Image (cartoon, rainbow, N blue to C red):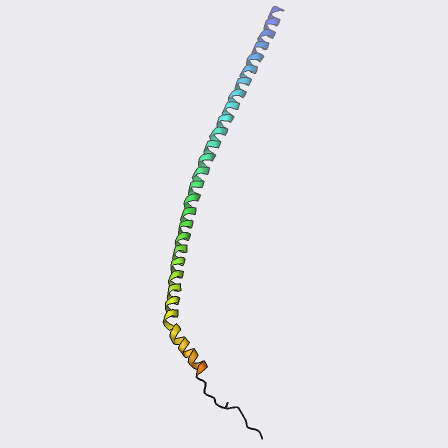
Amino acid sequence: MTSQSQGIHQLLQAKKRAKDKLEEAKKRKGKRLKQAKEEAMAEIDQYRMEREKEFRLQQSKIMGSQSNILDELEEETLKKIQELNRRYNKYMESVLKQLLGMVCDMKPEIHINYRVTN
């Protein structure tokens, strides 16, 4: 009977050691999962920062080129306005004289399609 109780006692101790090892393994697994999750989050954050940096660079290139285009368009528009104003000032007086000459210098004539009917 003693040997039987010793065997049962050994089995209970082995069961307890197995249970302790299993709990320890679960704890290590939980720690490792937590560590892996933290590492993954760090990688994700680093990747996100790199992609945002690339995005900002691309955006600055595009916006920079757009601002250059806008500056060029503004400059070109100002040049055209100045050219139009210069032409206006140059030809305004001669056009007004010509127009007034046509309106004021009337020469009464009979129209060629006019028929005298009696």
